[in-house]
Amino acid sequence: MKTSLPLVCLVIDDDADDIDFFKMAVSNLSLPIEVLAFTDCNLAIEKLLNSEIDPHVIVLDSRFNTTNGHECLEKIKTKLDIKEIPVIIVTGGISEIEEAQYADAGVYKSLKKPNTIEDLQTLLKTEFTLLFPSLKKYI
Image 1 (cartoon, rainbow, N blue to C red):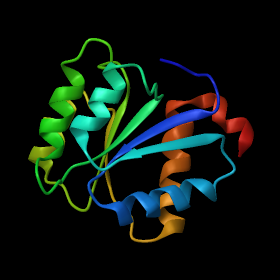
Image 2: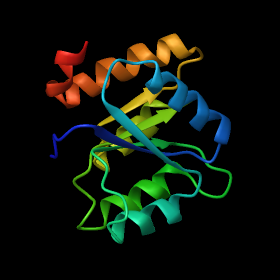
Image 3: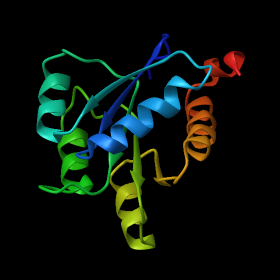
């Protein structure tokens, strides 16, 4: 797993408002994190495979208008070049069955999407410092 800084976080979510919410939360953290965002899973995967982007972690929405997080995750986890990138699923709600399916598919963690910027910041700070301990010195 890459550990160089700044941490590059790829967000794949079909809702531009959710992307803005995520970017705002990250920008208010004291962590060296760069956010790259795509509303289209296929475009994001194309950029990954072409080495146009090289994230440390992928934050993936579980619900899309045209596809779902499972399909997008499957595309990520079946590509040799990118399957080792940790994926965090963020969703408004997830059943235990879905959570188990994501875990079986190689997801690092499934998280419920918080309603406030502050809660999202707390969640991200916790998860990113667990995943990348070198970030602890910035807290």
